[in-house]
Image 1: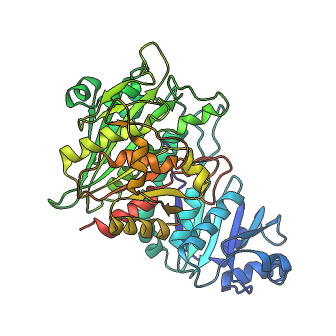
Image 2: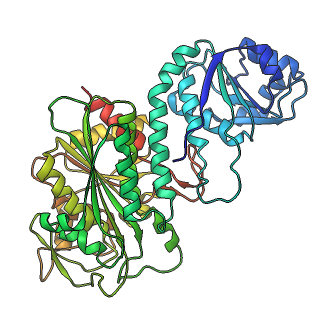
Image 3: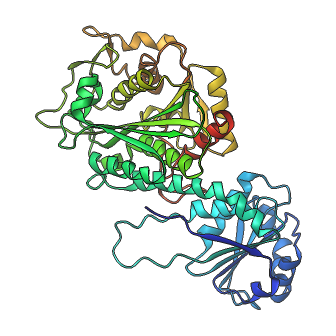
Length: 488
C-alpha cells in the first residue's frame, strides 16, 4: 500500500530555516503580515517576501494559494514558497495550502514554517493528501520519501491533533490504491485478499463465496459476474467499537472491471472502467480509517465484488433473475449492472445486520456526470434528517455533494412487461431512475442514502487534494458522519 509521507513537527527555529536545503515554505497574511521567523527569512532573502506582498500578483492570489521563488538569495533552499493564509483561515484553506506546498515541492527536504498558525495540523493533512504518488507499476527505483518538517509553536499538541488525520490519510490512500490498480491485478480474489488482510488492524472480515451467495439467494449479483472467470464475492468488514447499538451499514459496488457485458461499451475510454469498483474502494478506505483511529462506533462495510464480462455464459439482455428479496428483475441492459449488485447486497445487509441506517456508494451512472460534472456526487435519500446530516458532513470536509430528487414519479419507468421490475428506464433522469430502482430494496423505515460517485471517484486532471486518477472521495465525509452521529 502507498504510505502517506511522514510529517514531523518541531519548534520554530528561524536560524535553521536559513540553512535548510530543498523547499522552505512560509506563511504570509493577506496584507503581507509575517511572524518573527518569516521576517528573518524575508531579511535574508533581500526583502523578497515584502516586495511580493506589495505586488499585484499577491493581491490576485486566493487564500491557500502560493507563489514559488526559485533559488532565493540568502537562503540555502532551492525554492521558497510563500503561502497566503490569514489568521482566521478555515480548514479548507489550510488543507489547500498544505496541498499547494506538496504540489510545488520537488524531491528532497521540505520545511514548513507555520509558527502559531491555528490550523497547522490541517495544513499538514492537506500536504499528506496531495503528496500521494501511485508507483506500483512504474519501473525503476522510487525516489526517497521527502523529509517533511513542520515548524510550529506547540509541536506536541499539533502532533497529537494530527494522529486521527494520519489514520484518515491512510484510509484515503487505501481507497486510491484500490481504484488505481488495473483489473488484471485487482481481480475479485485479489480485492478480497486485500480486505481480509485488514484483520491485522482489528477489523472482522468475512468472505462469502459463490456457493454461499447462491444459497442465500443473491442471484442478481451472481448474474452480473457469471460471464467472467473471476468468481463473484461479497466481503463483510465489521468494526465493533461502540456498545450494543445497531450498526451503520456502508455498502459498496465493486465491479473490478466493467465491459458492459453483452451490452458492450464503446472501446474508446473503456480503460477508465478500472475505477468501476470505486464505491467498494471507498467503503474499504472508511473501514480502514475507523479501525486505525479506534472509532467508538459500530459500522459494518459490505462490498459486492464482481467482473462484468461478455462470454458464452454471460447474462443476456432480456434475461429475468430473481433477487434475494424475491422480486424478479428483467435485465434490459447488462451495462446497468451496478444496481443489480447493490440491490442484493443492500437486502443482505438489512436481513443480517438490522442496521440503524445505510449508505451505499457506487460509480453508478454517466447521467450523474451529465447532471453534476466532476465536482459533486449525487445524494439520494429516503430520510431528510439523515440525508441532511450527511450533507453537513460532506460540506464540513469539503467533499462536493448535491441533494438529488427521489420521487415516486419515476417508478413507472421501471415497470416491466414480464417481471416485477426492469433495470433501466430510459436516458432522461437516468441517475434518479437508478436510485429509484435501489429504493425497492430498502426496507420500510430504514434511513438510507445512495451516493452516485461516478463523477467524483476519478479525476483526469487532478483536484486540489489529489493528483490525477483516483481521488478517494467519500472517505472524509463518511468518517465525519460516523464521528458526528454514530460515535458513543
